[in-house]
Length: 212
Image 1: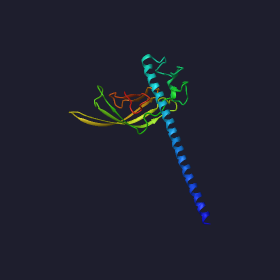
Image 2: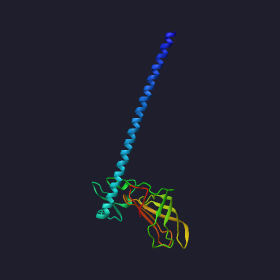
Image 3: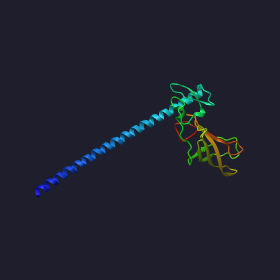
Image 4: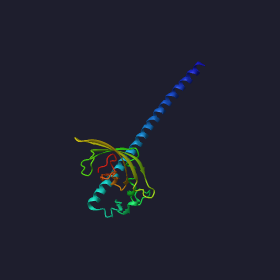
């Protein structure tokens, strides 16, 4: 009986050791799968970034040389089969360009709740002459009939001071986004009679700033 018990214990020890080995092998395989998935995701992100940069460079070249389209109402698809499509078809959920360029940059650049700062380099139009403007977007809506021009609303806070006076003000802004690839334009209408509106262009690559 004692011999039988010893043999059973030895078998259990060997089985336990084998289970440990299998567990280690599974952990190693899992780590390899995760590493492979991360590598694939990195490659996809790099490819998307290069694709977006290509659109930026293409747009800049078009601005200098001309796109061959009526840029006021059309966009150039580019790629191996250049073509002009209506800007009203941008981001409508259908690939009107053979290469899908018209659907390539339809993300939300100014989501609700996002906060931005604008710095003024010069201002000869307004009485306030603000140096900096803080903007918080409160509304972003894509019209079903015009998806290429989402409507935006925002609240702005501005302040300024000099030797004579200081002030601060809260303003309500409204405007739209123009989702033309490579030239994603934000336009906020002047909130006051002095005509100071805001306009800037996202390059389609760096979504954290918008020169204007």
